[in-house]
Image (tube, rainbow over all chains, first blue to last red; front, side):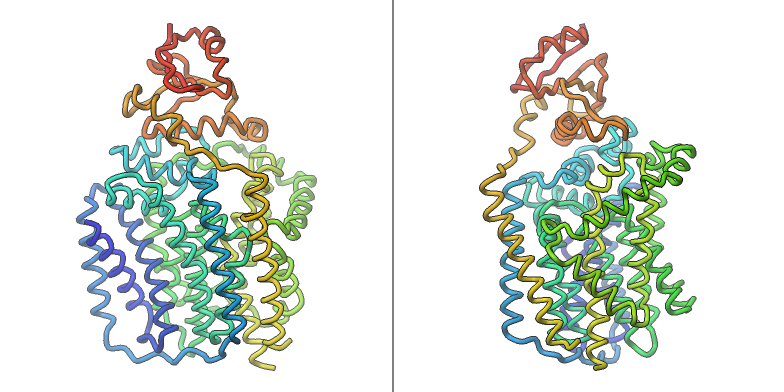
Length: 439
Length: 138
């Protein structure tokens, strides 16, 4: 069963990549990027198929066979394509490679230290994500897993891509070993760095790839969140995969609709990872439409996202309402929206967070400086616009929350920045690479 | 701005980030923080005495946040509740329900068990681990 599950993930991921890319990999960098994208999409599709199977009564083994067949069929259909243009060449100096090795060692050691100090993961890991995985394994009836009698802290309204992967790991291992969620967390952490790095290396050369990897791996809170076994880093992987695919599609003269659809599929898996993923998928679609005015590409993106979005809509039949809907009334929403103090408090908290050295070191300050000084003068991109829209959308979302604003901001803003950070590093580095290429 | 300057700036930012991470994980936390206990061992003895599925009552000497207005003042009680829920899944814990056939008492202060049981008219069935007890209505 373990071999079948691995085959299902591998074939499904490879098939999706073969179907989405209009060409064969040109070189090692391109191939490595496609392997990373395939691994992320394969694992996500495996989990989404598990959820669909649980909700419709299809056995896990049959689901894996179906995934294997579908992946193999896509692989066969994706043969005989022209070779892609080779990856850009801009070698990184040796000292930069050495710095990347140091950064990888520090990040890996930080991951392990945090994992040792918090053996059950971060608070949300045992309160939400691994709790859900345990329910999925231990409760045969989904109505128990999403029982309305669970206290709202368990967030039974959250989608369950990460719990689906962990729960299937538990089932395949035959016991609920703690190394399974740890391995899943580490895998997504590696993918978050690798996807950004390889996409940049593919488009602008190894120097920019190393710069991107450093931008993600040396954010102090990155290793902590990766180790926390929560869904934020997996969500960041799907958002950055979608961003990378949109950028690769945009870099070619004829924007490949299949590649845009694959980006949509990745964004769709983001919606199945966390509720925020729906916002990011919408923002990416809006950014694509606004910057390209290409309705066909926008429809291709939406069509790619459709399977996971349909799953999410189907799941919401089981799920109780989220906090905003459960604890808010029209009167409280209007009162919060018109409360000038809440807007002012949000602004103050946001400004303080930008310079929060303990969590972000100097990265957030540097990012905002680069955006304000250089990037704003450049032509806008679909991904950059999407990230801007997402950041703007969070202002009313925070102000309308039923919880005390300071508390909800303090407990959530770091994870939201982490969810968007790899895509932001990708978009910013790409803009800088284009600028310097012109000078 | 040349790419060499960008590379140098990123290297500087990365070095600051690495130093911050290394300082936190290998200097500050070992000196000032402690390793969290695994959650399951506290609840494993109670789990063996409870039904494998269904719903049970839950009482505690620490309040649990049941709405947005109390989230800031109930961190300890909410943590105890959610850790018990995590350990005892797929049992669903019903906070404050002291009329269920099985009631789990999860206490920050084990000495408060007798008073809690008296106040809520519960009978202690077993106290399998300090701070956790199984009770039933009198």
